[in-house]
Image (cartoon, rainbow, N blue to C red):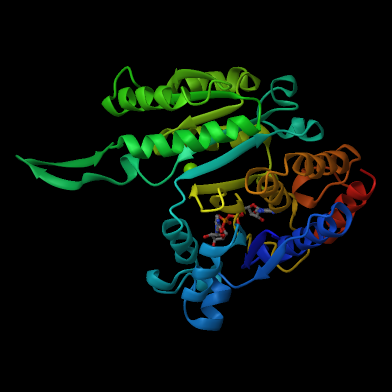
Amino acid sequence: STPSLLILPGDGIGPEVMAEVRRIIDWFGAKRGLPFDVSEDLVGGAAYDAHGTPLTDDTMALAQDADAVLLGAVGGPKYDVLDFSVKPERGLLRLRKEMDLFANLRPAQCFDALADFSSLKRDVVAGLDIMIVRELTSGVYFGEPRGIFEDGNERVGINTQRYTESEIERVARSAFDLAMKRDRKLCSMEKANVMESGVLWREVVTRVGAEYPDVELSHMYADAGAMQLTRWPKQFDVIVTDNLFGDLLSDLAAMLTGSLGMLPSASLGAPMSNGRPKALYEPVHGSAPDIAGQGKANPIACILSFAMALRYSFDQGAEASRLEAAVEHVLAEGHRTADLLGEEGRAPLSTSAMGDAILAALDAS
Ligand code: NAI
Ligand code: MG
């Protein structure tokens, strides 16, 4: 049956970049025989304006039933005064929590044409394509006990790094499944040298790895991993790590590639009855109120998020590569939205002109 896709454009530049993604989705339906059953709904401030809540129960139910959810961005200054319980971000948090999205995928992909945007040398990053899988729902951000306690005559701040075997196992399985759809190389990062949770992490990942004989598994201490990521990131394909290390390493990896307007992401949960993982795809950037409504936003992060959906939810790796190649092609031709121009004096492309260029490249593919 036709796969279903729930689209939640959200606020600010969300609807602007999502409009370009809609055209690309339609293109795959018309030209590649790949139709999607698309529905669209409100999230964030837009949902608050219409319903007084950043995510209605009806929208939540649609998200649970969809084969994949694609989200733009939420938030904006207009909503900063709202009570925390109805803030736009709460809509996104509810989606992540109720869909139990425990694996956060952050690719670091560097298109050759943008390699000079990187903080590293061109040859270190040009053509880079790696994926960091960060455990998102457990670890030191959630472990109990936590708090600031009295301890004799001073206070002590406590967080607990805590991972159960099943929490490690499920994120490891997501990472191995991804590696199977990529270059079949997985590096697990922890600090088993000083942390008990790291010892268990390494043991469980190794055990799950026995089920994936085609994936080459390696282990690295996370601090050494940070060094290797900046020294020679192309040695990696997929990296799996815990919540805290993943927070740091994915931000570090993002800066290998440059602009916020280029970065997609995905959050995956457990497999549904059809075998597909629960999945939410979204650009890393926010609603960019400073440029919203002006047709200036770069739609590529959101378009690449859809490419991730093609590859990781719909088993359409070749079509995902087709879309990524179209993006690469327009960048190589010199097409740039304002965020990709820096100090250059030339006129930038608008959001929809960038969409036009990518569609033209798809037509020529
Ligand atoms: P932001 O990512 O919205 O913007 C940061 C800077 O990057 C701005 O100068 C913006 O113009 C630029 N930028 C971002 N995306 C761009 C794109 N596609 N094309 C061109 N330029 C782009 O982060 P900021 O300013 O910290 O937050 C703005 C609002 O977005 C806040 O309400 C925040 O809470 C929300 N936010 C939402 C996220 C989400 O929906 N997942 C994530 C981050 C922030
Ligand atoms: Mg972070």
